[in-house]
Length: 170
Image (cartoon, rainbow, N blue to C red; front, side, top):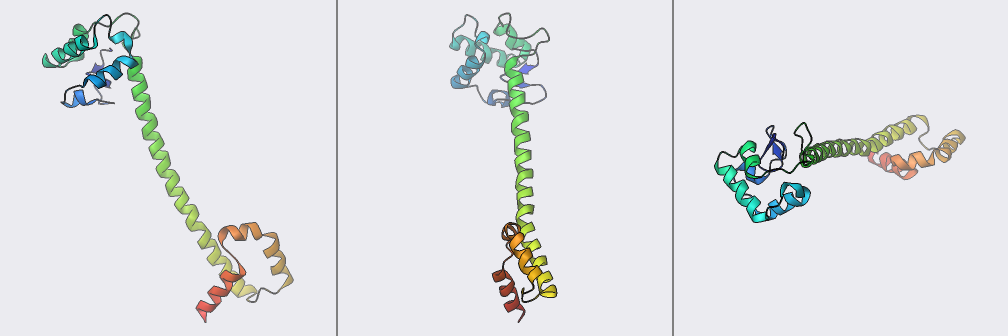
């Protein structure tokens, strides 16, 4: 484990702190998952021995240094800079989840704007056709309606929508 790690998976900046770092006891299931992620952390000890050593370190102040002394880290589990791969993965997961949530929120806001755009455009088109060609009988209006049919359908503009608006005005 890295010197920057306090308890399991979190660093002193508060990133990705597991329940053990929040005052509750670490469960055996959580420890097994941690050992699955980083089997070198176990060394030649049983899972129960690692759990005992972690609890002992927590009682002695819970510092990463005490935890490191209680559970010796085999060579190769962390880089020369003291960085642990599990920590990097957890930080990147947190960053990914936060960014993904932010982007999905933006996406939802954009989709609402797009949904509101159609009725707004439809309203402007109906007002324009009422001013320019209320009966929609001119050859030019008919040609535009035919040529622009996919767009007009997308925004909800139709002869029926125009007629409904005319009935509301009457």
